[in-house]
Length: 192
Image (cartoon, rainbow, N blue to C red; front, top):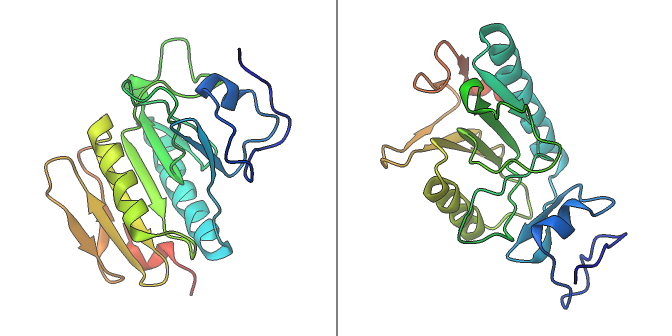
């Protein structure tokens, strides 16, 4: 038996949900489902603004090139066949056009891994949790993960083949294998 919850169970630790239960929550904004437990995913103002800037830049590129669709922090992904009650919501994500289901963008969660996932570090994020999430994304088939640190003004690029790099403010952020032609200065992602 599943139950429909009207309020996010962020305090009660005894509540366990399936991914379907989680989808039916009246408000799952700022929440993820981690193996049946609802976990708050709160972005600070700085991280939220940086995330919005990344969404804007990627969306502009994808609309003009028709290379894919970009999603904000409320788009959920069920990309873990061995963990059916794990729903992750990257701060920013992109799915290549040819991978969007023929039925269109789903009303619920995507049942695939995005091609690009972006995590923007907030003050309440713990590094080991971010590293764990990045490892999950890469195991699930995400082709590139950006870990954006607004305080240090850096972007860490992580790939399944471990050809990782860290870009500083004066570097250029590109993604030629996923988004040919996309390029911006790392410094442009952060407020002055």
